[in-house]
Length: 267
Length: 172
Image (cartoon, rainbow over all chains, first blue to last red; front, side, top):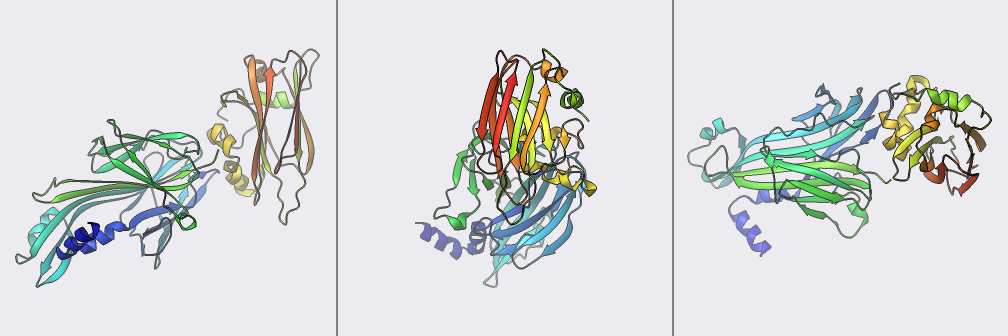
């Protein structure tokens, strides 16, 4: 059955997208809990199949933003892009929690022109520039958010606020206060409203050293919350996706995703 | 320093026990380890209640005098202490922090004359000793005691890696 669907998608010319979908985009921090007057964190970013291994593409850092504990912008330093991963550093001078995030919103599309598949990206205004003889045009609205939290000194909550666009996560348990054997609550929102019945996946690092991925699958309750019982310490990748009818365009689909890298320490 | 009352610990640490005052006597053994690269461990000693709630810091041994306060960087490796207390403190802290200590048995005495201990409500507590070593491991031991002491209590725990013999004597 899966093969049939894949064949149908390929025939429709969107195989490239379903393939890209299998890959996971992520950031991996050198540490999430830091001490000292000033501290540095270095971050890897990549797109890959297996977490957290560099084996496919470096992460595009164009949309990267670092938000300090008081909402202040922090500069990403020493940026570099390699074959399989991107890297940058940040100096943490204030105490509190820093959010590293990449928000991507926009339109993506695909069509055939003279029998050749074309992938398109742009804004609502640019849709009119798509050639009139484009065949099989399919448009998608995208709202993707990726976050990593890092704390120097005592954790702070002040910058955890949903902006009201796409899928967002507002931690109830502080994301830098996660310990094996404890339960943590995270709340999800879609366009600022609690996202009920959302499927959330959590995958622990070190996949290469075990036979099964052992992903945790959770569903948000009516308030949009999941309660995660951490059995083992480690670096976890959290992801959730949602597809809805288009908001900005008629006859388009809207694809939203949220992902985060969370570190769970042993007690 | 943000936490009120902590400065009184200095008096607590330095003060000798007056007649009639209860006392905590603690012996902490830092074991000799046969390793290629050895650094003195960071050690935090504190009092928690039976639910694990942090009550009072007694001692913190770390590289407190390194240039640019580099030694603070590793305080988070005292994982439980960092979570319960350390991350809320402003460094340098007065009163209970000191240099790391070498291999051997170290004696500490805490008199109840200090308002800090005197204000500790009567009940069951645990003295916690947590050690973390650069390029080494981490170990944590808990020694239960009652406060104020009705009779002499002697609690001994034996560490297996980063800590040796820990002895707590609580005297009325």
